[in-house]
Image 1 (spheres, rainbow, N blue to C red):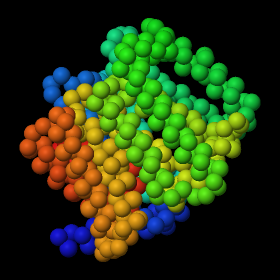
Image 2: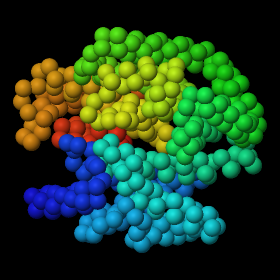
Image 3: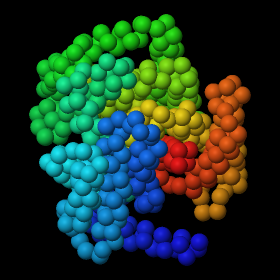
Image 4: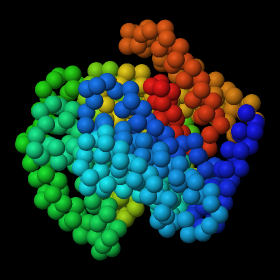
Length: 471
């Protein structure tokens, strides 16, 4: 085991030096995160392998993409281990995962040659060269593992949208989950389009042109597309979906109360002009638990729709903050100043990671996930990480060797998650002795990773927990 650990560290150091020699600025005070790099691709691939024979086309194709992304990660690591320069240039080696993924799309995805090659190239390109570009364009914001996870998430989303939206043009969705998916995909693509336009045309970054462009793309692009794809008004469908059930109405009102509490915390911190403490930051994790657990129990489809729309809103607000656009730009910057930490340089990644980590299992293109696996993000970062941070900061006197985190914090992390799991079991939402045993082992293992890792907890822990619960 020691030999294996030393070999891993030597390989890690070699890749880190390769990035440094090519002037790629890695996130400070953090390791490379090699173990995190393939996890998104693995999660999507495992979801496909565990799904029964009734899998959807989106699940099949994204599962194939997950296999391709793992191959891309391997090829990128091999390329970085070679002592040459100009690693940001596109390399011949990157065509290997692209070709293999194209073959998988052609043979198992039943796609034509042109579509298979196009998607294979997209997976191979973003999974290799795209990771390096992500680190380069956002210097100091990502580790190698974090950039890989973000890039892989992007390609899985783009592929699922590329499969689903053309299908809905010919066959409008009739089920609520399909309709919600179309709305969310178009909403995210709308925000991404605005961001790309701002990057390509500097004049759009001014307030007048930004709002003209935004409303123009919305009114003449996103809204008409949704009407065509859904064969109905998306706004009327959302209102009808919410008000069709009194339980959904009360759930929305309850979530609005939680939102007001969160806004109140932010407003108070801005007015006090003091840096947010660990306890204040973790209050948002507790609010997330209050939102997600009732939502998953009673209204998972509503939660799926709401979290996707909130992600689109967060991305748009972050774009407005970066461009310092009135009327919210200054307020958003003040919030960034008091809540941002060392992981947030010029992009506010922490809240985006939090929302993505909590919602990760909910957003996967599968409908047969267990309730426990859907709780992966809530358990790890909503409950466990919160307890570890609060207890560790107040009572943590015994540190793990080689880690700034405390043994007391890790114990709190484990116990808090087990209390939630056993509490849900007592209430009848979970059952089975083997499920509880498996969950206990997963909680202990992931909590130990939390104690040692220097990767972003909000991103890494939910994916790791999900894999531990479904493998």
